[in-house]
Amino acid sequence: MSDRPVWKRLLLAYAGGVAFGLGALTVALVALQAWKADVPRRVLDRVAMTAAAVGAVAGEAGKTGRAGEKEPEPLLQDPVIENPALDLPPGVQVPIPEGHAIHVVRSSRELLAALRAARERGGDTAIVLEDGLYKLFKTVTIKSPNIMLLSKSADPRRVVIEGRGMRRSSRVENLIKVKSSGFVLDGITLRRTGNHLIQIAAEDDADIPVIRNCILQDAYEQIIKVSYNKDTPQVFSDSGLVENCVLEYTQGIAPNYYVGGIDAHGIRNWVIRNNLFRDIASPGERIAEHAIHLWNNTSNNLVEGNVIVDSDRGIGFGMQKRRRHPNIRYSNYGGIIRNNIIFHSDNGDPFADTGIILEDSPMTRTEGNWIYLAHDYPRAIEYRFPTTRGVVVRGNRSNKAIASRNGGTAAVLEDNDESIDRSRFLARLNVRLRELNMPEMR
Image 1 (cartoon, rainbow, N blue to C red):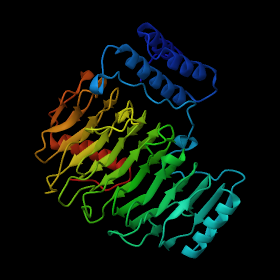
Image 2 (cartoon, rainbow, N blue to C red; image 1 turned 180 degrees about the vertical axis):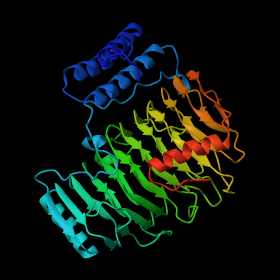
Image 3 (cartoon, rainbow, N blue to C red; image 1 turned 90 degrees about the horizontal axis):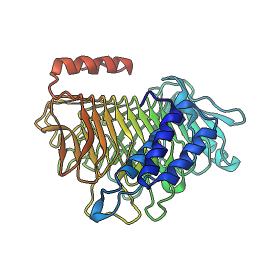
Image 4 (tube, helix red, strand yellow; image 1 turned 120 degrees about the vertical axis):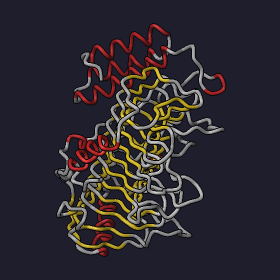
């Protein structure tokens, strides 16, 4: 982020839009709102980043995207929705707001009864789980706003919600599906289900979901899924937070290839930070999805400070497709991938691939990441295809190439090191694991 004051960055972005005759009105509206609104500085920083991105698109007015079309501007989130959980210290549980109903439960039956009571109340309910194992045999659907699931002990190892098992199912078996805003999951383990542990429905405008301090294990498909309806492309999931969680397959490999850590469509201004991903890896047939994959009209998301170990692919923004639905304006736009650590040992996983990949993802920043691939894949960071342009790739450290593929272009490519050795990388990795209270690696 620039050291210039926010108001100056907004003004410069606006001026750039005016100068090139494109995006000026959008930038002006964003600048005006940020100037007048009484919002925290980090929100203004995000607005400034968005405005600068629009100005950058305007500045490339002569360039074209897919099939000769102009590159679209991002679908701006206006106004920016604030997520208050962003300011909580690591490990501190989300506080229960004044006015919420509170139910303390000790069994699966009591948990389901509390969820029914929350629905009848219309939301605004905290359900506090005592230590124990809670078995769920069908999907819990959250349709009311501001529902909280919290462990009383704040220790996810002591409170476990478990599904019917990690296996192919003839019906949908998510543990939790969220169709409303303000959902909070904090300090709980979710495990063993036939589809996703959590599905967030962007198509239902499920904003500000918070998943913190959790252990998420052994889903037969993607562990966290954010779904999106291409027929209502203006409806998104905004300002989500996933932090201080462990997402993993406990047997060291997934049960099939159709798995991922976080697979998110139609999200804007999410923060995914300080999580540990382990063994998001396919056993055969095809490569698994990424540990973190954001695509289909996703924009301005931050992926920061995560550790990814022995997963087929680390972080992906965007996905190139031969035919793109007319309501998908871009696969991903903008966003930041920063200060993540990605390690893949030479462990025999059949589909070990790249660390960070940008596909159909213009104006994205990839900065300060550390990547060590002990297998034979040649590139640690890839920016692919002509629609991936204007990207910044700066200050990354790896033992493999950082390179363009298939016509991707970087506006800034500087201060990257492709020659780190294993001992230097492991020293950095273990410092980060200690910060996350995780065992070290050798």
